[in-house]
Length: 243
Image (cartoon, rainbow, N blue to C red; front, side):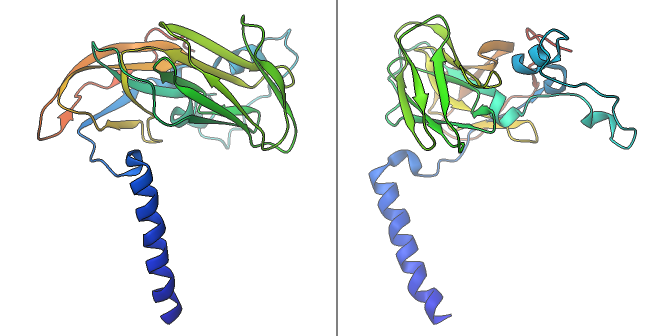
C-alpha cells in the first residue's frame, strides 16, 4: 500500500500534463446518441473479391453445424469499418493532431475515415514485416514501410474519396473521404451504438462504409442542455452492396 501511494500521484501528474498539452484528450459528455442496423447484410470489398472463384485467394468450406447461424456470415467489424460523421453547412478546419491508421494483421485500423481538407494522416506499420502502400489512381505516393515505420499523407482540398492499397498484401484497404463540412466522426461500438459530443447547432449525421455513404442522412439539433436521441437506427445496408 505505501508503494501504491507513491505511484498514484505520479500517474495523476502524467495525466494532468497530457490533458494540459492536448485539450482534445479531456473527457466530453456525449450529447447525441444513436444506433446502426443492417451491418450483418454488408460485406467489405476485400471479402467479396476473395470469394470470387477466379481470385483463388480463399477456400470456402461447408460451415460446421456446431457454429451458430449468426456467426457463419462474413460481416464487417463495425468499430473499424463503419464511421459516422456529423456535418454542418460550414467549412470546417483540419484536425489539429494527426490521425493514426494502424496497418496490422493484413488490414488497416480504422479502414474508413472521414476528414476535412489538410488533415494529416499517419500510416504506421505494426506488423513484423514490410508493407508498401500506394494511392489508387494517384502515382507518386508509394514506397516500402519497414516494421514500426510511419508514412504521412495530407488530405487534399475539395470533396473526394481516396483509396489506399498495399502492393504486397491485397487485403490491405483503407478509404479516406474528404469533406470540408465534417465537424466530428465516431465509430460504433460492438453493440452498434454511437455517440457524438457536439456544440449547439444543427447537424446532419451520415454513415460511411468502404469509403462510400450508406444509409439515410439524419438531421439532428443540439441544444445547450440535454441529449439528442436519434430514435430510428441508421440502416447501413441501404445504399451498400448487401448480401
